[in-house]
Each structure stands twice: as structure tokens, then as C-alpha cells.
Length: 588
Image (tube, rainbow, N blue to C red; front, side):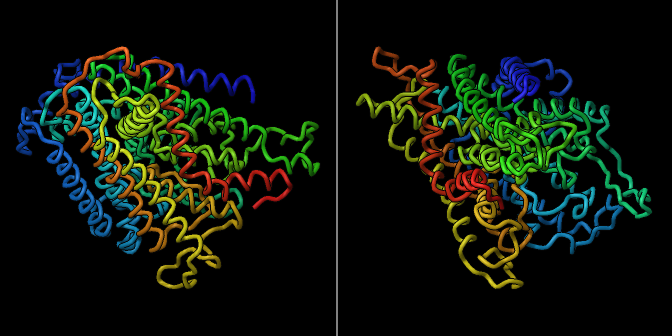
């Protein structure tokens, strides 16, 4: 590792630390209905939306009504997104004249589920598949509303801890509206203007055909990119307008835009930890969650950076490069942009998979085995390492429930968290969320690894002889494992090296995304309803403190142990065994 590389990581973390409190305080005011500096210019828009939709701002919902609203809104969003994709040939803003055949029914299903669940998994190339209208009216709209829905759910879970003997946990429609109006729209307007000023493309032109130096013809894709790049990052969506995503200079042209885009990813997830502390009346509780997330994040980024900087020992030993210490000279630059280098690429990969973003500025498939395992394991933890907007906070609160439950077992006392007794229902809901997500990953990966589908048949799925993966051995297995992990973890990034635009992958990864979103959040909403109805219990000498270093350590350990116990066998068949084979001189 180099001094400049370490400095980049440290500066990034310090900036995130600096913006967490002001961002968190602002969001707490928004969701508690307090006035902010944006209320004067934007309150009229909030009120107008309530009037148009018939939402009563003061009405609140029980947890069942809140959860029902989330499901109903998501279903309507899915149908809307699916229909627009299938009808793109007859819709405006389609200068490339993409037809309905560009988006098959199974691909439309997968993409609609992907954007509604805030996964943004893409089994297609954006610039060769979707019209400008589909990218804007369907996909970008879902980037806004799915992100706002995620934060709304997190706030509902926080209310479960902050309220006493309450039958309600807020109003989903009000929380959704406030998030869009006061948080996502203003941030994205500023972000889009900044990105456009730095060279990110924003137009509605037809693709440009140019003649290359060699005399050939090249088509240069363009479009309304800057406006969608902002919400892609701020909403931790990750779906790229262009297939190369944030490795493309039209989406991410300079080291400055790269740094700002990384800040956009963690801005809201980091701030929500302070929002939590303020809403429960103890900022220290929020900082404890921030500290646990930070430990996991920094451990991951330095492991990935060290692995990529060390590179492939086979190249050093072969004499292709001079490296007396048997390290690849210059490190592993395969799949990385020279504009960013190894440190910024490893940092970006750790951020985007610690959050449920999925944007990439380098190809994870080209990372070393250990470097590639870090983003894979980040997703397997439930993406609580700051996590997605909303999803990171309610995911970490799930692990906090399990951590205090474990602490209670050790001392023989009923566990408590933020003054609420954690009883059978809350623990069952937390375990249901963890088990459902893990099952979706492991079951679908296992089936895809061993079932021999007919090559060239309708399903065209990966069996031992199928041509869907480009690499043999453990690396090929890692490609499949990453695909389902990314889907169920609602991340959206891909290992690459695998053809997933087939009916089998589109349908099964789509199902994994649904499980990862709804069988994770709905149990937590149920737990929030149960917690909100409880009284606060008084703190005594026997109460386990949840705002200090001991709890932070326990929480980090819980996240790692649950992830290790669940996924270690699968990781052993993929990146771990690949690492040892690489040390022995064999690559895939």
C-alpha cells in the first residue's frame, strides 16, 4: 500500500464523519415534521402532493397498514416500470429507435423488480437496450421512490424504539413524500449540476457516429446522464445509464467526480445513524452504530486495497515483472481505470458494496481472489456497513437486536435495547429476515451450479456444460455466487464474466431480489410495531450499555459471525480456494 492511497481513504472517511451530524440532524427534523431551511421554498410542493393524492398529513398507520402501503406502492411501481419497458417502441425520446424486442418479457420482469427493490441489477447494456424515455420515466423515477421508501421504512423502525405504548409508527405516504421533496430532490439537483459542470454528459441527442484513426466507425452513446448519475449515487441505486457504469468517463470523468460520487453514496446512510440517535433521544446510540459500521468499512477497504496492491504473485514469479519481494510490480491494475488507480478503485468497490449501491468504477471480476471477496462478503453481511439509504440503518438495527439478545443469554437477563425489552417476537422477526436472504442466495446458487439444463434450450441456464460463465473452477462459481448475493442483497453490482440475460437468471435473480427486499423489511416493520407498543424500562445497574465500545465490539462480532457461519462454506468453494490456488501458480 502507498502513502497517497492510504491518505485518500483517510480523507474520505474524515469527510463522511464530518457530514454525518449535520445531515442526520436535518433528516431528523424532516421526518419529525419540524421546519428546516427548505420548508419555505418547498413546503408548497409537499402540500400539493398531499392534496393531489388525498393523503392526510396528520393521519398515522399501524404497522400492518404501513407494511401494506409499502407492498401496494411497490406493486404499482413494478407494473408501471414493466409496461413502460415493453412499450418503449411507441414512446417518445427514443432517437435510437429501440424496439419492444430489445426488452424481452423476462428481462422486463427482472429490471422492473430490480429498480423497484432499489437493487438496480442490470442484465442488459443501458445504451444498447433502453430508450431515453425508459431510462428517465421508468428507471430514474424508481431510483427516487425506491430510495425514499427505504428511508421511510428505516424511520418507521426508529419510531418503534422512540415511541411508548403507541399503536402507530407513522404514515408511509407522508414519510415517502417528505423524503423525496426535502432530501432527494434538492440533493440531486445540486449533485447533477456539479457533475454536469465537471463534464458528465446531459443531452437528448442521437448517438454520434465517428470515424476512428484506423478508418473504422465508432458509435458514441450519450444522453441525459448527469441527472440520473446524481440519484444513482445519492439513492444508493447504482444502475448505470451506460454499461460501463462509473468506469465510463461520461458518467465519472475525473478523480474529483469519483471522490464526490463516493461521498454521495455514504452521505444519507451515514447521516441516518445520527438521525436514529436524535430520534431516540440519545445521540450516543447513533454514534455507536456509526462506529460499528466504520470498523467494518475500514477493515474491508484496507484488506481489499492490500490484496490489489500486492497483485498476482504468478506474474512476479514468472519474470514478466521485476519484483524481488514476489509482489506484482505496480499491483493488480487489470479491470481498473488509470484515472483512479488501485486505491480509489478498492475504496469505491468497498463503499458500493458496503452500501447497497452497486455502482462500479472498476470490474470486480478482475480483482484478486481476496480483493474480490471483500465486496462479496460486504453484501453477505446484509449490507449494513453503512448500507443502502434506509436499508443500512434498519439492517444494523436487526443485528443490534440479535447482539443484545446474545448478551442477554450470556448474563441470564431479558435483553433490552434503547429502553425496550427484546422478546420472542422481535428475535423471531430478525432471524426470519436473515434466514430468508441467506436461503435465496445459497439455494439459487446451488441449483445453478449443478442442474444440467439443455444448452441452447429455452432456459439456457448454467449447468456444468453450459456457456453462461466465462471462467472455470472456483472463479466461475464465484461469478454465480456473486450474482445471487448481489440480487438478494439488493446491491446490483456484478462480478462480470457471466451471461445473466437469460430466462433462468432473469427470473431467479428477480425472485432473489424480491426475497431480499420484502422478507427483510417486512419482519422489521412488524418488530417496529411490537416495540412501539411497549413501555420504556428504567435503566438499572444490570442493563447492558449499548452506547459504548463493548457494545460496538459485540455488534461487529455479531455481524461477522453470522456472515461467516452462513456463507463460509460457499466462500471456501470460491474466492478462498482460488486464492490458495493462485499462490500455487494456478489461475482461472
